[in-house]
Amino acid sequence: MSLSGKVALVTGGSRGIGKAICLALASDGANVIVNYARHSKEADETVLSLQQLGVKAKKIRANLGDPEKIKEMFREIQREFGSLDILVNNAASGVQRQATELEIKHWDWTLDINARAAWLCAIASTKLMAPGSRIVNITSLGSYKVIPNYVSVGVSKAALEALTRYLAVELSSQGIIVNAVSGGLVDTDALRSFENSKDLIEDSVSRTPAGRMIKATDISDVVLFLCSEQSSMIRGQVIVVDGGISLLAL
Image 1 (tube, rainbow, N blue to C red):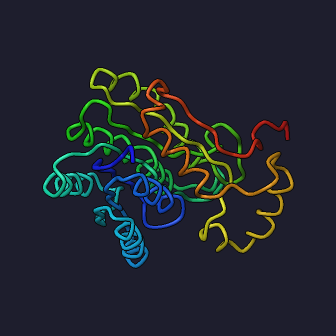
Image 2: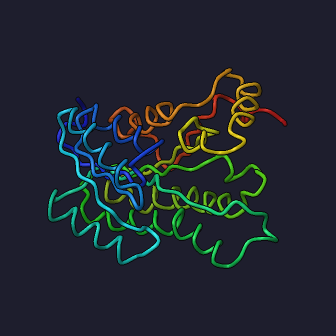
């Protein structure tokens, strides 16, 4: 296990893609901290699944829209674990409206969770990280492709990708490696809760060259690779995991 004894923090780690990332890291030996905001039951279930893999696991509730809560979370990590080797900025939120229908509070909330929190978590992490540590940001195709009612999220993800590049250069002197993973439409419980989920899934499958939906484990497998020694010369890149759909003209 290449990550044996390492300590990883996954924000938004209680369910969906975040949970899959937690399980992938734990399967390779990492001790995992599961950050969550609202889904306490799911966080407990994820922690139990991680512990069954033989690693140390802990949940920490923190609203990442509040900088003070982020500071408290990292103080708790330092007290209990002493160090941090991997940060996965996975937590995301947003308001699905067109630009003309957004309110300032919607814009601020989305940017605070999706971009500012990733910056604050990254900076806090560096104080606990040794050379060779990893930061992986989870982004989406909406950072550069126009998706209906996605403007606030798309802009926040574009900011996150720019942050990835800047941190990759600025943190290189500390030996910290930074990259991002961008997913297409991923088959999760959250997606299936949408009223139009069936139509979304059928449309995605029909247009994706790979011929199937992206699974959460498709994302987590790439995150795991980016946390391995085999990826040490990949820096500041956004790895797209979308089955090829973004290659199409329409």
